[in-house]
Amino acid sequence: MRFMAWFIGAFACLVGFQVGAQETVTRNLITNVHVFDGVNETRIENANVLIEGNLIAEVSSEPIAVDGAAVIDGEGRTMIPGLIDVHWHTLYCCNPQSTVVTGDILEIAIRGAQGAERTLMRGFTSVRDVGGNSFAIKKMIDAGEIVGPRILPSGPPVTQTGGHFDYRPYQAVPTNPADSQWYWYSVGLMAMADGVPEVTKRAREIMRMGATQLKISTGGGVSSTYDPLDVRQYTRAEIEAFVEVADTYNTYVASHTFTDEAVRISVEAGVKSIEHGFLMNRETMELMRDNDVWLSVQPLLDDEDGFTFEDPVSQQKWIDVTNGTDFTYSTAKEVGVKVAFGTDILFDPVLAERQGAFLAKLQRWYTPFEVLEMATSTNAELLELSGPRHPYQEGPLGVIKPGAYADLILVDGNPLEELDLVAMPEDTFDLIMKDGVIYKNEL
Image (cartoon, rainbow, N blue to C red):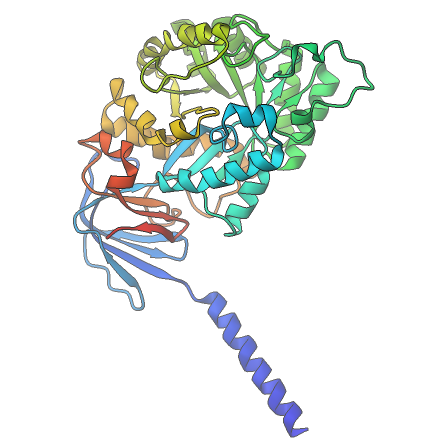
């Protein structure tokens, strides 16, 4: 009996110790930094930032006294919020196109998971994945099993027959109801639906998979073969069906589209995020502004980072689209459309490493402050359109303030004066923290 009583007491102490350990909050105090908070153009000079657990507890120009905190001297560096890319493809970015042709979903997923760690190490602590089956990667990142950014997944992007995501071989049609789905549709890398009933079902399936928003295509694309740029994909009724399903889940639809007519019908049907839009005119941008529709456009230029396609038709479409980049950015800024930053890097692991360089390209149209604001607090505002489907609601993203997620970067220099610093993260990002965890520390 005495042994049993001792055992019960020892077990109780052990349990108490374990509970206490779980309740212990890690504290990090970062001193001597100049803070760009994601909102204000003026830095908070000579600041100190206290992180408790995964949240920012205090930002002050006065000394912060706290017991048990690990102290990191920022040595005068600039602290900025973790960067956000709202047009990212976790799987497509880091797989060469040959893998999509000859590989399987396991190879695609493994390469995507490896690429996710490199995405975080470039300072992108959050991404909106607008196409691909990244659900398992997101789950494992959130559980701490692998390293990567926060992911708001759209799941498989949905196309009509002959639409932007119809990459099936030429011999794939005609089909009949007894045919099995194409391999990449069956594993959720992409999806296809035709007609309102099928659109409704497919949209519900994708939300069931865990999507935070839906991604569809309502216009022709560059990398696809059977859809000229001027083609308007999906009827108004079909687009409205997507929007209605998203609305039942209290979230929204993002759509790939380029041209005036395609954008207008998408906006009128209720789409809330236009992806690309390089071939719109001013009046269509005004329509977007008046309907609170976001323009998620990318700084794609036919320059040293230009995409190369084996198909000469796709290559010409690329040139046609990028010829509209300057007009789109400059006019959107004049009109006052809500503009978000993304990259849309596809099938090129080497180019994916240039993610920060794409952000730096925005200084062609914006000041460094406007660029950094867009890639932090503005992009975070777009993510909030997912409403209750947004998986990260403990605090705001994209800002440095009490109560916000501790996603932050220490930059060796002042990117508000020298934006090119974000293009060289391996050299200039001396500390990268996500959710209160330090993933890089060169101090």
